[in-house]
Image (tube, rainbow, N blue to C red; front, side):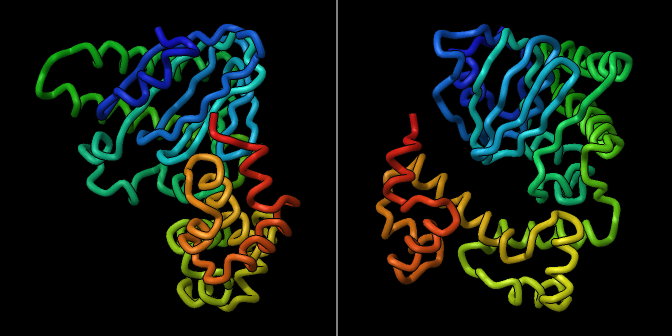
Length: 287
């Protein structure tokens, strides 16, 4: 069983795969102050209670019957915990690659690149089906056999297919099967890889073999944002992470983010957040 003061160690110590029940009782300030950056992909399945999970500075409500998927490299922590109970599943790319040779071709690849944090909201019957898969994973996880990891990989593939079918069937989620949405996901994937090099929609449009105007059009249609805003959001998110979780100077991190002019980065950050970088670091220190 994982508790609020032990789950971070469990995540850090898990090698390729882990599954465990968790129980987070209300603590003194109703918050968990620490942030964790996981090297795993994580499913958090809630069976009882509620809480806010903060993922890369955005809040998501979790309560009974909800499952959230966190991709590796995301920072997350908890707020407003109210007797939260559920199951946590962790896995690395290598576990799933044992079944699917290329993770980029897997059923969850579009969500790995997408800006949306996917949440499945299940009714009682569908959540019971989901829990049956988790039960099988838990049973298999205690076996000691050279075939165990392969069997776990196959159960994981079923788990992921089930989860993302639920997400796509939920009217609250974006329908990613649309061609425009697929292009936007490709764009977001490029931004995730090249945000420190390219700050202009034109550069990304060239890589997608479309015009900057069309890129803006589909971003507006799918996400209600301009392409430039999506690029800026990704740069600012990385800047926030570096200010909160590293000791780099503002000059050093601005250079890493592709800004040759430190003062220009300061103006860029302040325009987007309302705070200069130094003030943001004071307001949101890594605890």
